[in-house]
Image (tube, rainbow, N blue to C red; front, side, top):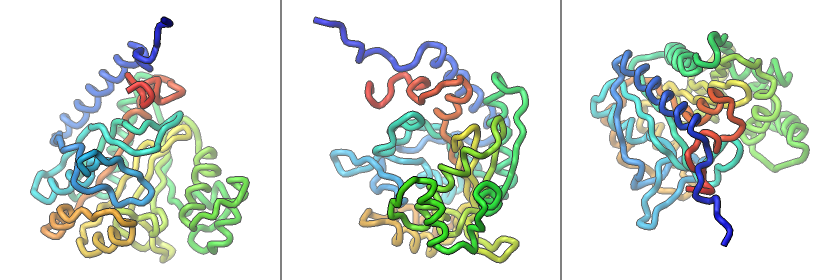
Length: 311
């Protein structure tokens, strides 16, 4: 009988050691800043409301968390203060070169912090994590509108849906029958992200208001409504997603109802926000993608002990 290799790990011992050192660096980073490490359940009574994320359901009709965001916000409402967490999260169907349905996320929240201050901290953490490979990493901060104007040549705030779709169809190669936001995602992934400067931490902020999710919405200098959020990109990959967190329970309920698409709504979170979510900014980062860059790995499986196919 031929010997099977299905039992064998997908990464080598050097990658395991790199992950161990990475965890120590991250914990030391937050310890030095006196941010409280917390632990929340990975199984919840209700799923995420985001229609772009497909959660996994257990046999007893509970849900594996796609992010620790909802329980962490309940802790914030209960008076936890600044908190952070590193945990496993799960998203159905996300498997490929840079995706695994089970992955590690770093998420943290800072009370009374602006997005600029949070971006400073994200930059500092990434630079510290990447220090063994890159001694210096410059940064660039631009708005979503500036990015599309500079790299694609369109004014995203004034462009019509048809104009956005035309650019998206050219980028994709055919008509995918997407919404405006769907085409903007194509434009970002196919045209903007590949054009961003390499070996540089690129923060893109002030997304269209339609992509606010759990972020506040405000007016930019030109008077257009924008989402108070940012994403961090590095060498062709998204590493982090940060929000100036929405604290209005009524507005959050409206967004949940609009996005739920038949899924139950997290009433516990809404009750907590109604009691009082403090003014805060929060961010989520993909730990495995950070490790891919740190080790020079081509595939996410190269930094996982066992990927989805061998788990």
